[in-house]
Length: 203
Ligand SMILES: [Zn+2]
Image (cartoon, rainbow, N blue to C red; front, side, top):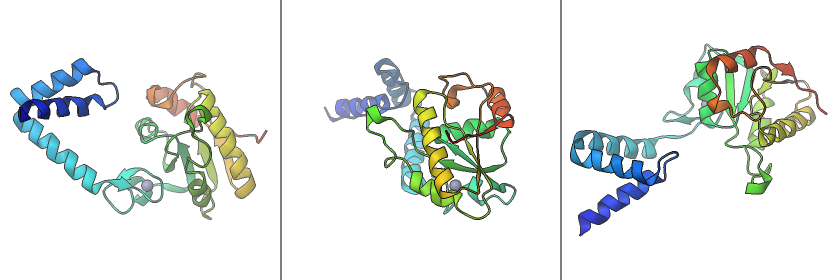
């Protein structure tokens, strides 16, 4: 009976992934275990290696298996520009839009009082430290255009105005519809929004 519980455990683990329902999890598990065992072994090893070696970049919170991630260590990026995003997925969308050549800072979420995520749960202290570094001249807030993303942008604007008044704070704006998640916005729209960023008024 051990094999039955192994399959069930696999299906249950796959179901924890975003966007995977019970039927899809079942299909994936049977596919991996019947016709595609080599892929299954490779997937298992890759997952174990990633879990063991990947950690958060101490500069920006991106995932990396180096001491510092490739966006923070690249010598071809502009140190004076810092883009604040909610998630790694949002950062990837901006990268794909080819509209940004500065550094990043990933908040690891957004303010969400109903879900118990307040300023202390986000990396706001870390962000202030990062934005306080002398080479930073502009912080671009690229949180989503949902109510929570806007509240997060406002909180960041106020914090930076207080702690780093010499730094220009801008917000990506034009083109991204109200209520939109950055992650699901097409890259051309994101590129336009980055180009049209506006000074963020602290009010
Ligand atoms: Zn980094």
